[in-house]
Image (cartoon, rainbow, N blue to C red; front, side, top):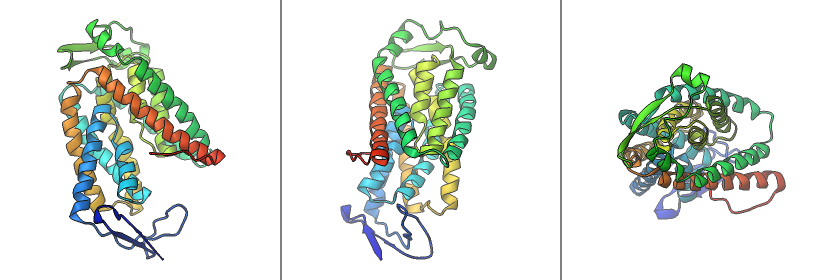
Amino acid sequence: MERRGWTAAGIYTGFQKSANLIPLRGKRVYLQRMVFSLTFVLTLLSAASFAGFFGALLGVGGGVFIVPIMVLAFHLPMKIAVAASLVSVIATSNAGGSSYVDQHITNLRLGMFLEIATTLGALSGSILALFLQEWVMLLVFTILLAYMGYSSFSTRKVDDERIAANDFSQAKPDRLAAFLDLRGTYHDEAAGRDVTYVVTGVPAGAAISCLAGLASGLLGVGGGVLKVSAMNSYMNVPMKVAVGTSKLMIGVTAAVGSILFFMAGLIHFYVVAPVALGTTLGATLGTHIMNRLHSESLKWLFAILMIFLAYGMLAKGLDLRFNMHIPVFL
């Protein structure tokens, strides 16, 4: 029995039963061969560059863009698309994260501290996945993402106003932030000045970072949007620093998942190579543009992304629990 796909742009792939198992939607379907064309590779490279560019602007891995493109436009199996996306997150984190470090935007101490909470959350999510029903967590994260999208939109002008008033440096650090010395300074090109900030609300930020890891381990979604929102909304961290710090962190979480997918034989060179290269090129360009944009523009894009993710999770949750089918673009 054969499954055929990738008819768009004349791209063809045959999926047949053979000795190498790839489970698709609970069926015993095996991957025998994958035939690629130059058109496929170049088109995927372009799509990945787009994903890497916007991922660098928003501090996310770009998987939220590239996975739907690979599944819907190129008709790749979901598991192969997710595996390629995880590898691309590592690549774009190295490219984007290192660039933000060179620009002295990333807060390394803050990133390393929050990554501990994220890792613990990811481990907890993997365990909870064995016991909890997926639709419950989908609806919970729908509410969380929708709230953060609204928060980002409603405070879209606050960052620029606080930078102009030098307000980020006036906050009083909590005990943990003072002990870890999490304050920092970066140069904002859009504002044309150095911005000093004092980190506060470390327990709340760590809790939300733990939720980001929980989402990654339980649902297989990226935690970048939660980390950026936590740092900006609850920890007195400017939007651009939150983006740069998140960009550095996401590669660590993705590395663990990519190893598991590699051991399962789901990482294919002709898919991973153009995706990793494209996201790296896009991320490199995005990191040089991000600091020139005003925080209001970044928050607009960020709010749209979170509402988009919330809608996708809501649709999946309603489908699983109530068998309600609404259009899904994720």
